[in-house]
Length: 99
Length: 222
Image 1 (cartoon, each protein chain N blue to C red):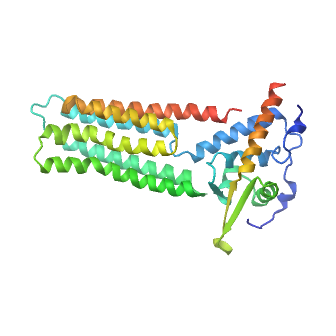
Image 2 (cartoon, rainbow over the protein chains, first blue to last red):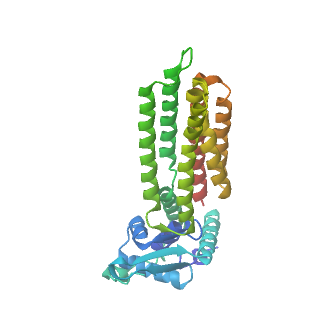
Image 3 (cartoon, chains in turn yellow, brown):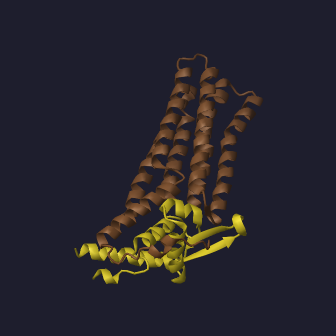
């Protein structure tokens, strides 16, 4: 197995950290954009870009409530996203076993 | 999603050069940190709480040691215990607020309901104590075995039920240990009930903290 076997959508430092952080919450639980940003210490623009890629792949969902300054965005891992992360972990384990 | 863009967005990494070892390290480190931040029972805080509870029960035991006839703990020690409970509750609320900031979903509502159930159960033992006093039970019962062992049995059973509903077997085991300790404390007399109860809570809480720390370490390992 080579590093190419790793899901390129997850195999990027920022996205890997996003996925690992959201996976630490139980299924069906979401995290606010602000808290996620604080935890990962990413700029809003950087975080949005990565979240879009993961959301487009169906790995996470985002839900916006409220309008204007009172708006609030929650992000949660989907079942597909959790499964993709498990597959990624298994692939990393496989690669490390072969090293 | 917030639609603000900044110049750094264009510079986001795609991690093509991320080494598998580095990926594993990043994954473990991030998972560990996230679990620590989301935890409602941080092992260190939980262990310190266990020690504080043990100290409070030992203080109560020392205050009744050698009493013949038994009259109950002195008011100074009881006041100290109430202060300890208040400080412990404040720490618990702070930990809860920190862990749950920005977290939403059905499990969060369930957590609030659990908190209410726990508060009600904490009030259960003093109510029984009051009823026993009302019906003329002696000091050994009203100010001895019931206040020492009652909270362990009532709160421990509530925690065991909550743990079972979530299949949290670590919490379930710890809660059962506390309930068992409370059951034993009921039969060792009003003086030693305080010591047995203190040891039971300490063992349950610190054992839970140690097991949680070990479980978390194992969970983030690839």
